[in-house]
Length: 237
Image (cartoon, rainbow, N blue to C red; front, top):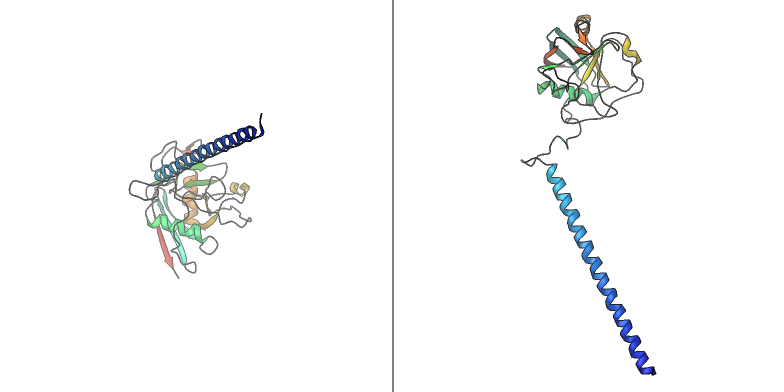
């Protein structure tokens, strides 16, 4: 092949390769653009699913304790009026401020009114209640909460002795509204995993708690519903 003809052929081949290269590049760019559009659409749809129709966050997205409203230098007492009598709890705002604030908030919002003590554990000497979704006996009692969770306030030295009031949870930093009251000595076997936020204030309160503890149960469910009629918060100091 003559030299000029060979050079022309090589030039045509080079141009063809460049054209093919540019075509491949344009296809890749277009594909990336399509992927980006799809990702954006998915994010928008997901965000929409997490927002209620009125524009507010749904319970699925709610996290964290209520805003702090208590004064930790003051004294707070909770009066639980139950179907078996009243119990006074001396709350501990200095050692568990977030937990006490949460309890005070729920009480003042009447979230505990009509809620059951759904669990009576004789193996642990505790009575447990505070599931704000549990106002009638059902299999779901003990699984509900206020729609948010908040962190533990633990020292690692917690002792669950008679009269102690502590948060129930389903693992680290899953506090909500449920709590338990220790009525005897068996709860001392519990690990230091439950925030203590108060203690029964007097012998009369302990007697009511022990009366609840003595009620007939099926498994750990009271045969007769044990109702928290109301929780009143007294503040002083």
